[in-house]
Amino acid sequence: MSNLISHSHIWATLKNHQKYLASVQMQDLFALDEQRYENFSVVACDLLLDYSKNRLTKDTLHLLKQLATKANLENWIKELFSGELVNNTEHRAALHVALRNRSNTKITVNGEDVMPNVNAVLAKMRKFSNAVRDGDWLGYTGKRINTIVNIGIGGSDLGPAMVTRALRTYQHPLLQSHFVSNVDSSHLGDILSKIDPETTLFIIASKTFTTQETLLNAHTARNWLIEKLGSDTAVAKHFVAVSTATQKVSEFGIDPVNMFEFWDWVGGRYSLWSAIGLPITVMIGMEQFEELLTGAHELDQHFATAPLLENLPILMGLIDVWYSSFFGTTSQAVLPYDYTLKLFPAYLQQLVMESLGKQVTRDGDLVDYSTCPVIWGAPGNNGQHAFYQLLHQGTQVIPTDFIVAIESNFDLPSAEHQDAVLSNALAQSHALMMGRNLAKTKQKLVDIGIQGNDLAQQLPHRVFPGNQPSNTIIYKKLTPKVLGKLIALYEHKVFVQSVCWGINPFDQWGVELGKNVASTLLPALRTEQDGNIHDSSTNGLLNYIKTYRHK
Ligand code: G6Q
Image (cartoon, rainbow, N blue to C red):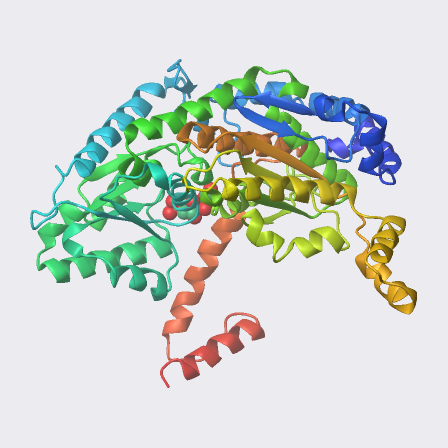
């Protein structure tokens, strides 16, 4: 007897239901139900989710709700919030909700309340970021810090980089920030060429403090600083660390006094709420960071208490399961009509694909259904002049999230800009849903004077099949609080998907593999002898590089 959810009665019912909906046009669903928008939209935590432009009916939602019940979703949510070891392959809790637990209620891991430590680190972050922002933390030569360089990668980079970019209007006017992640010298080298060692503070962010890219970049930055300022003692004034590994931070040469701690129950891609958020607190201040935490906490409470079909992350998660596992969709677009969210798609790529890019269940059984889609996207207006062609006339069903700000964070004298953004966003989701059939297209072409052979030739190229599903998420303005809600919404949506699919969203063995294989190739690259330890392609590439790298 299989434990896979795909062998359950509800799964079979959903499969049959999909067969019926596969041929239904969304525009017909709208025609049949004048209240479709009211029936398929929710406002909660100051976010509007309109999911009416999806290939679903009330029946679909009730079946998906049964799927969630079958997967024991409500119990899993309780376990997540109460510090159970939900990351079963690493025997850890996943307590990002504790990091933003503004109610300060007790949350225990292995019998110990984590909140006193969480609050102590927040207090330390406040003290430090205030000192930098107020000009009290001085560099080695006595100058005030005006540049922050965060060195980290993956979860120790994408979250803080995205948030800092998104909340640019909240930044301290005298501070600028850079995020260095890639190990090729064009990243760090470029930044070092632009900054002043006397006024720069490096934040070395690494949960493990063993990640090759981060440590190499950190060592190079450290050597650069010592060379420029002429003394090892300068390091104490220009380097701080964020990590769970005190000993390794100390070995690197950073005094643990200047280390901001977090814990193994904070997953890398869920860590921006922890001390990994230090560049955020320095750039926008602790009060605004706390607003970010408060927003996320509000969304957490909504997730933990709202009924299933009024619950934003649950609705979004179930809809995503519906498309991936029943419609067989393989990708999903995220299109912010808010340029401050430029880095949000990249951030979500890690959050979603590192969490759900799995092929076995928690019990180790191979799944026989599709799980994680490929996440991609870019700010909406740019996308319209590039890849939207695929959405309008390509061959794939691509569920899309339109993320729309009613007001911009940057005021321009003319209201035209925001009107243009809003009208574009709404027009695109409408057009993707409606499409334009053959008859309407023909009429349109005739109206503009196209006839005869020309008409016959152009007609098939000018038809839009439509029926492309989308969610639209609207908020008033991207404040820190709203951003906190938006991020938490996606975090929990991912959790819902993981529960339905029975997979652990909190491990990342594929990423660990990447770390290990790189270390096996490094010695081979450095020896004079021809490589002969890998497959012929890898050996061939290795030897080609060795032949030409110094010529
Ligand atoms: C995130 C992953 C991964 C990790 C990086 C950096 O969930 O575990 O992206 O964040 O590999 O790891 P360190 O923070 O340990 O350097």
